[in-house]
Image 1 (cartoon, helix red, strand yellow):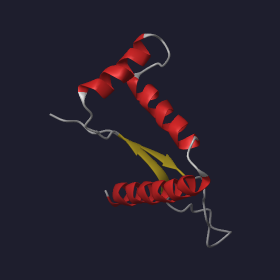
Image 2 (cartoon, rainbow, N blue to C red):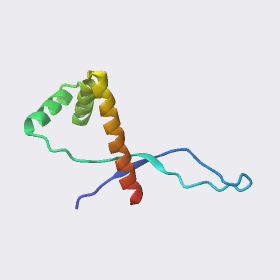
Image 3 (cartoon, helix red, strand yellow):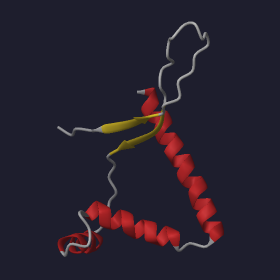
Length: 101
């Protein structure tokens, strides 16, 4: 059986239409985190595992995440702008999909 886990981070924004009535609005997630799979070959996996095995990273996930962050930080300004726009779009899609469930 394949179990899926999701973590939802809630926004603290609470609105009230009637100030005398202390009803709180339902909190809407503005960001979600869940497990996803990416297919990689054994060479990429071995690189990430080697970096974590020698103690540079806690896990393969951390090694890959930090490597991506390093690469993203080195991008030219225009590519960073486009990257951020695309990332924001994908994150918003994830929230919409998870909020429908």
